[in-house]
Image 1 (cartoon, one colour):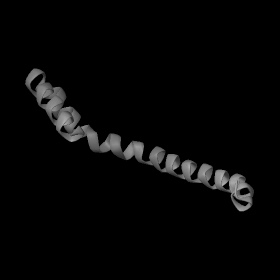
Image 2 (cartoon, rainbow, N blue to C red):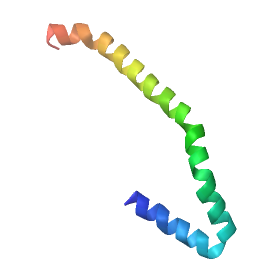
Image 3 (cartoon, helix red, strand yellow):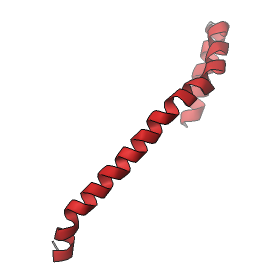
Length: 65
């Protein structure tokens, strides 16, 4: 459903200002490439926090709490 909404917004932008719509279409892969390292860092941080949380709650899980 989100992809359809993005497509409809792009079609609206194409009807209103076609050079800006084409520029957005060309620049979208570059924005994705720039954002990729930040997404990877986010995944690594989430995994690290999950590991720390699991280690902190391990004694409680072993004692049956």
